[in-house]
Structure formats: structure tokens, C-alpha cells
Image (cartoon, rainbow, N blue to C red; front, side, top):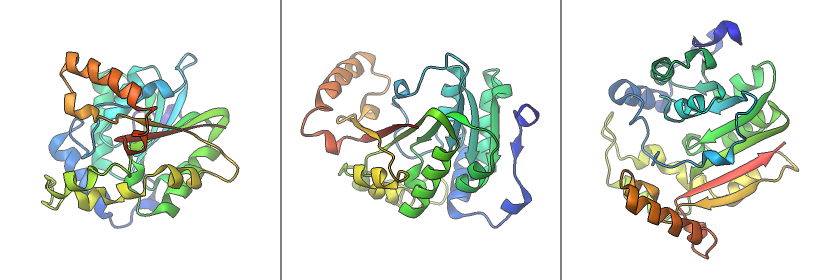
Length: 260
């Protein structure tokens, strides 16, 4: 690990033609950097679902891209191994880590998550999938990725999934009317697999016999009030109440937390 910190590692076996997703997110990272490299609301993630980094815990991150969440994990005191399809996004990710003087605690690997994670040596304290599973092509791919991550956890390690909730009825109309800044297609073209991200699909995708703790977050989307601290605090309290109400299955985000 020490020999590859701060470097992007890509094996020759991964040098096949770029996928559409890789080209798209590479374009976003090149043109918009770390802050705008995704379509789905980034403003709120429940990092309190993670174990505290009291022993400098090592995180395996799927699809960290340009590093919005990677940087927050590094600032929090974690070590991070980030796997992503896009080399350009990972370049921006490493630069972001360099800017906060945490590059030595970051390793990046370019390629398919399931293949890369399966071949990694050692075990991790935490594996995270933060707003990335809806970019997988199908449920089988999601299941394989979650299994690979779960297998790399040490006993007692935590698998955390935090995704946009596919049952929320606003996602599709929201992205159908928006154009992406790279190729001019409807954003729904890249976000359409949001429909796969439901409680039943996520739980069924976990390894056999593994149970997850499910929570719904932000019945009122947090992104609507980003930067408006007073209103945001009021909405946060209201959301906390709504997350135990009958409206919770239609919240904007869903999380699954698993302890190995």
C-alpha cells in the first residue's frame, strides 16, 4: 500500500475501449473538476453512519470519481483506496487530496470495481458506495460489486450504501428536462438506473444470509436548501420527523448499513 499511495494504478488487463460512463465522467471531471462531477445531489451524505476513524481506519471506496466524498473521508482521518472507471476523474481526485495535504493517505485504482476489489490484498475496515450504484448497468453488476466489497471487509467491518432513492417520483422528470454539459443528452440517459435503487433490490443484492439496516433520508430534498443555513436547520429537523412517517419510502435518499 505504501508504495502506491498518491498514484493511480491501472493494470494492462484494463486497457480496453472506454465505456460510455467512463467517457462521460472523464469529461465532467476535466471540464468541471471536483465540485460538479455528478448529476445527483451531493449536498448531504450521512457520514455519521460510518464508524469513527479513531484508529485511522482504511476505507474502500467505489466510484469516488473526482473526489467530492473522498476528500471528506480524508479530512475525517480515514485512509482511502478509491476505485473508479475514469482516469481523468481520479487525476482530479488526487489533486484534491494534494490540496488538503492528504495525498499520502489516498490510493487510486482505475478500472472495474469488482475486478479490482477482488484482486486487492488485505482487508478493509469500511467499504462505501456513495451515490454510485445507480450508474451500474444492472442488478447483477450491483450484486457482484457488493459481494466483492463485503468479502474485502475484516470481521466487524462496515459496508455502507448511500444512494438516491429510486422510488422518489421526482428523479425522472427532474433529469428528463436537464441536459448534461458534456454530450448534450438528457441527464436521465445517465441516471435512468436510479429506478433500480429500491430497498428490496438493495437487500436482495447483499450476499446470502447478510442483513442490512435500512434508513430513508431527506423526504424534503436537502439540495433545495443548500447554503441557506437557517432554513436548512429547520428542514433538517422536519426531515428527521418525516423519516419515521409513512412518507419515508419516497424520501430522496436511502441507506443500507451492514456489519460483517
